[in-house]
View 1 (spheres, protein in one colour):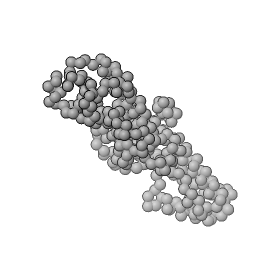
View 2: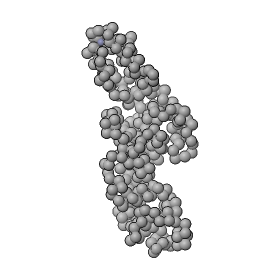
View 3: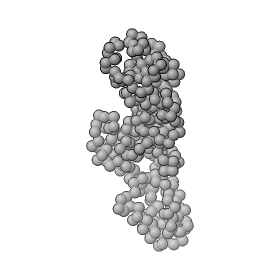
Length: 306
Ligand SMILES: [Zn+2]
């Protein structure tokens, strides 16, 4: 067995010269300390305890892992090098977050699983208040763009963090063109399931209708307040604002926050009512978000996430 390991495997980092255990993933070897890994994971403890010592490399027992070498590398580096992932550091690549979530869940390494989960929930929150803060606080996934949203959605299901699905699928529906959702490659780690693909495309038109509701205070024909102090002026202001917000491209985000600039040109009563209406409707739209994707309600998703 030594020959097999020596010829087909190669050393990978971390490689501790005084390590007493060799992990092999996809043909690559990691020399580590059994006690360090066991201190993080009962699963490792049980696995190493039950593994036979028939296979040896440099007098170290070998344990074969079925995980990807990249996932194993990210996790071992994090466990060995505190600077590789400092909790609370602004951003981590999605590859690292994915490795922490998958292997953190599988091997019950709670510190890594929670680190990954916190970052995903931070970028795809369950409350409108936290969603509003992202614009200020920034994303916690490094290099986040719409191209990786499919991977985030798959990761939510794989890592049992379904609480992020409404916000992640919302992002997909709002910002990824339907044709890109439909023609994206199938059967790869970066492709959506057919069910999620369909849900995101169907949701786009539902979100569009919700957006019209959130902005219904903009209807120039309907007074925003029965106490309007200058109906004609307010109506004209709303008409002008409608043209600005809907042309050349229509507003599509039913959860967009109120913009104080919109109050200009409206009388005091209309401005107050418009703001109240907008905020009420955007909250209702957020509350209804899981149902847009036929997901369980927020309370149910939250209870599953505990
Ligand atoms: Zn008015």
